[in-house]
Each structure stands twice: as C-alpha cells, then as structure tokens.
Amino acid sequence: AEVIIVKDEAEAGAIYGRCVADLIKAKPDAVLGLATGSSPLAAYRALAGIVEAESIDVSQVRGFALDEYLGLPLTHPESYHATIHRTVVEPLGLDPAKVHVPGDILEGAPLSDGERIAGAGPAYDAAIEAAGGIDVQILGIGTDGHVGFNEPGSSLASGTRVKTLTEQTRIDNARFFDDDLAQVPTHCITQGIGTILKARHLVLLAFGAGKAEAVAETVEGGVSAFCPASALQLHPHATIIVDEAAASRLR
Ligand code: F6R
Image 1 (cartoon, protein in one colour):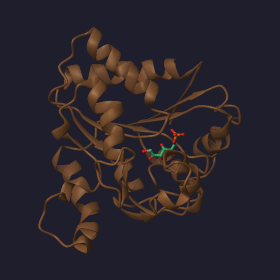
Image 2 (image 1 turned 60 degrees about the horizontal axis):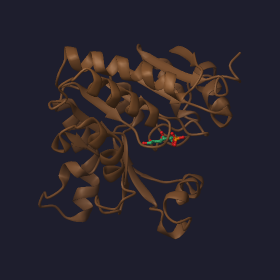
Image 3 (image 1 turned 90 degrees about the vertical axis):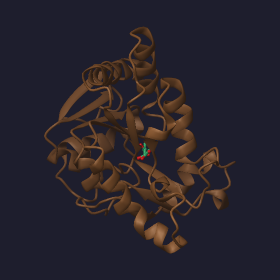
C-alpha cells in the first residue's frame, strides 16, 4: 500500500476530495464505498466543497455503506442509514435512492425476519456487483485493526454478513446511545474483508496516536486475521493516509 503522511485531517480530506471529484467528472455514475465514524468526516466535507465550487453533477453517483446495526430502525438517528444521510447524502446532494446500507436492500421484500437477516449479506454483495463494483472505498480503522465491523479473527475472504459486536466495540459506541450500553445493538451487518478487497481503490484514513499501533500492524505486520486491516496489503491499489501521530509507530 502507498502511505501518505499529512499534517492534519483537512489535508487528508483534500486528497480524497480531489480524487473522488475527478472520478465523478470522468464517471458521473461512480460507485462510492462509504464509512461512518469520525475519520472520514473531513474527507466528506472536502468533497462537498469541491462539488460545490466546481458545480459537479452528482445526481447519478451511487453509494454503498460499509456496515449497519441490526435491530435499529433505519429512522433511528444513530442508524448508519441516518448517519450516512446526515454526513454524506445531504451535504453532497446525492440522490438518497442511490445510496444503500447493508440490510436496506431487502427492505419491503416479503420475507420473514430470519430470511431477511440471512439474505441481507449475499443480496448486498450482489447489489454491489450489479452496480459494477465499488470505485473508491473509504475506510477508517479501529484501534484493534478492525475495518467495517470485521473484528480480529474475521475471515479475510468474508462477504457481507451478520456479525456479533464485540463488548469493546459496544462500549466504544455507547457514547452515541446516551452512554447506555443496554441501548447499543448487539449485532450488525458488515461488508466482509473479501467484499472490501473487491473495490478498485481503497483509501484508509487514520488520525491520532490511538491508531498508531493498528496502522503499524496494518502496514508492516504480517497479513493476518488478527489485524483485519492488514488485508490491505493484498490489494493492488490501497492508499493509507495518516497524520504524524498515527504514523508514529511506523519504522
Ligand atoms: C465505520 C466503520 C468502523 C470505523 C472505525 C474507526 O463505518 O466501519 O470500522 O471506521 O471504527 O472509527 P473512527 O473513524 O470513528 O475512529
């Protein structure tokens, strides 16, 4: 992977924004892979700024989010459906009907809950494939090396599927649920590592000293399910953009 060390999130965001804006100019129905969390926010802001300044037509752009909680209604403010709408769809002016989170694909289908849960992953991967694949997938990284909700131990060949959230991830995310662990969902649907590796370009963003260990493991450790992000080493076009603090454990 190519590693770019930047001074701050704004500089990282500008690199992503320029890259994706140029992509959309060349391919108006580009397919963007989207992530929630704090790492991509400056990148979305930068892209929205360029789209506005250069009057780029984004009406055909399509999007697929990395992951979604299971058991929260899409309308819940902390669902990733709602989060992606707030942080990406609205600021960029995308067509909401063209942006998906895992699980919404089978929304309204005449299925039992069990069928819906079992079918959601394969249906999502099929929808990404039918769209021609993801052009640029933005990624954050967990302090334990997770990408999407693929926690350590996840198969590097996995497709989109239902996973149990680890206790640590539920504790980390309780801040979005009034610090009440009981309100944090216990399960999720996440793109698998195999799904993520199919995107044509991966852009992983990491900032702050808390990510330094995971970044070093991702870039310089062996490829291992114990650090799911290390699978990026297998990808022919992965860009890892980090600030000095997140780069501080690289040799
Ligand atoms: C978000 C996601 C997660 C985050 C990761 C980092 O959709 O799948 O893997 O990217 O937990 O989160 P932040 O950016 O908030 O540090």
